[in-house]
Length: 104
Figure (cartoon, rainbow, N blue to C red):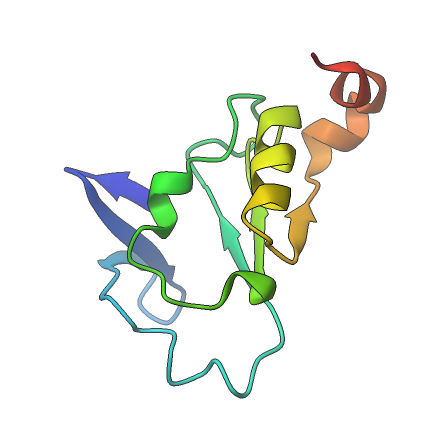
């Protein structure tokens, strides 16, 4: 996912392009999928934190949401408070494991 002019876009691999995310676009799949992974592609590989604004139009129940991209301690805590299924730890966090665990 990425934000452009305050609109959320998702990557459509069939077209190899970003397309505007329409509200409720995932609802028709929700009964068939256990978890949705939402990747903040603009924060991937950084410690900037996941941009939670990306999910403003996503209506999937929180218990099915996994987030990835820019994950830091603040992102982890916020995901917990929002009752998300979890976070997906990317390479940066694995490579700098000690700094991720010890962030204040």
